[in-house]
Length: 124
Image (cartoon, rainbow, N blue to C red; front, side):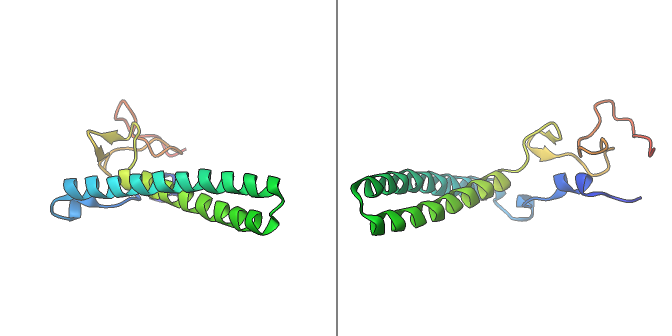
């Protein structure tokens, strides 16, 4: 049975069940990443405003530094947001009561979601 990437994507993610006290760990990681995302977004706003003020006042050196810091903070915000989404795990119809669907359940072709009727798909 050949597995394609679409069927493997729902199986990728952190395994918090392998660690004792995983509920507390998930809460701590989620809280820290949320604070990190808030700080990164505030840095984006601050650097954007600094870039605008420095550009309008004719200070090209300060504008250049603010622009560089803006792009760095955008990268940090994107990475932190992605890490937060990855740590929280999937949120969709293939998640049942906070747990991933069991691997033995039949998956819908191309989406990685279990079929609602529980029947297996044909291999055409």
